[in-house]
Image (cartoon, rainbow, N blue to C red; front, side, top):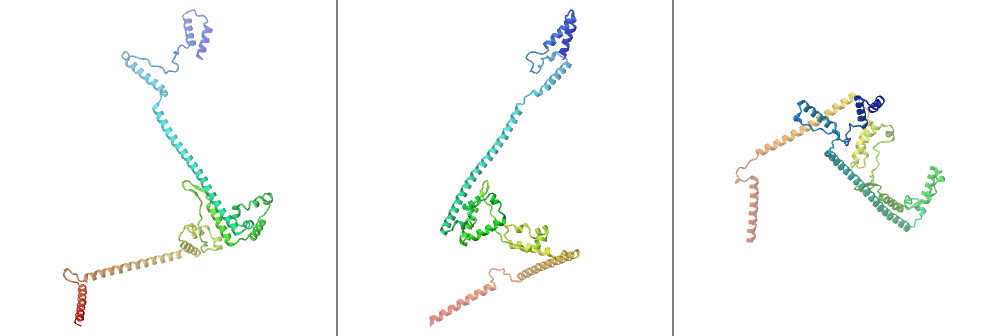
Length: 367
């Protein structure tokens, strides 16, 4: 903007210089048009400091040059390259990326192993399934069972005998209602009655088929199947009215979750406690006076029990004291040469017995 204004001013006002002022205007125009204030080859470089001999300068000039050097360094501080810091940051980033890559590789390896193990387990299950179904078909052939009779058992779906019935579905099959389905099921049950022994064998084979399946997979363990525990039915002394008209809190207090856990070993104790809670629930609510009487009664029972305990302790102390006194009254034998009465008595018995034996031997020799 300044250049255009100056150029326009010079060429419009002084087209032909004739004196010193005109020469000055020409120099100014040439300086502006040629941009002679810019050094060649120094466009991208920082301004270099002039070497100054500080011995020829005064104190004020030395201070001025120091300020200029500081300002130049401060102005170009962003152009400083921190090579060491960049290398450290790069190393940290590389270490983090390596850990991430290791984690990703570990996950991929676990997934691949899981898929491989799943395929292996599926093959094992299929092989076991074929063995069980082969045994079932051999038993069916030995017993001479017809396929129509066998369709009445759930194992028919495993053998593929109900495929035709499934293929008959569609629009017509969807129109069947529950009543028709129940009637057909009853008819099949009546027509396809099996021998109890054969039915038990088929049930056992069906259970083996279900047990062979392992739908869940745990890494490091393999295929698993959750096994349900078999427990005896128990109503905990509750009838239908108790279940219908009791609150949830009362039912939880009467039969806690511990009583429903299949791993509880002492089922009898749990049932007894649950029945006791139900009996307490059936009792009427106690008033304030009744609670006070019950409290006094419990305190009296506790005091009586503590008194009995103290009496037993005192009796034991008296017995111990009596034993100690008896031990004190017993004679103490200070000399080892003196015989105790009991030892002396035993010795005399042995001597008398030996004398009698000697007398008997003498009499026998005389005879």
